[in-house]
Image 1 (tube, one colour):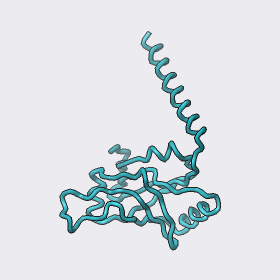
Image 2 (spheres, helix red, strand yellow):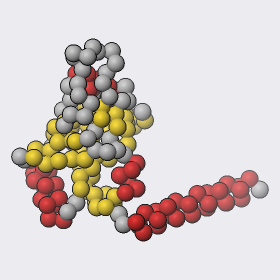
Image 3 (cartoon, rainbow, N blue to C red):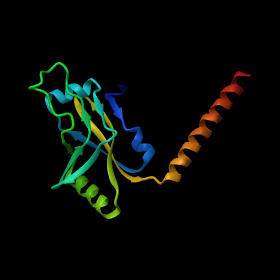
Image 4 (cartoon, rainbow, N blue to C red):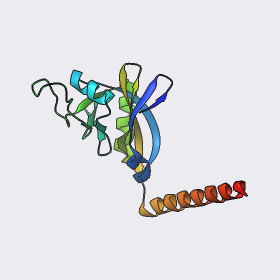
Length: 157
C-alpha cells in the first residue's frame, strides 16, 4: 500500500487506464461490513473486473472481489462478490446516470484507498478505446522508455 498524507492506496485498476479513456472522476464512499473492511486493510481486494451499476437512484459496485477475512470464522464472513453500495450525492448519481444513458459511457472503479478510517473508491466515467488507440499508447510508452535509457547513458558519460 502506498501512503499519501492520510490516504493509503490499497489497489489501482491499471487495466481501466489501458482499455478506456477516462473522462471524469468521482470519489465515493463504500458501504462495507466488519470483515470486509479488515480484509481491505490487509490488501485482499481485486477491482479489475468491477464496474458500477445504477439502480433506483443508487450506485452499486459490482464484480469487485474482497477476499474473505481469514481470522473470522465462516459464519461471520462475507460473500466476496456481493454488490456494495456507493455513497455519492444525489446530484452526482443523477449526473453520472444521465451521461451513461445519453453517451453510452461506462463507470469503472479506478482505485480503492483508505482515507483516515474510511474506505473510498475513485470511480471514473470512461469511453472504450479503439484498438489503434491502444497501439498508440504502447508505442508512446516504448518511446518514453527509450528516451529515458538514452538520457541515462548520456549522463553516465
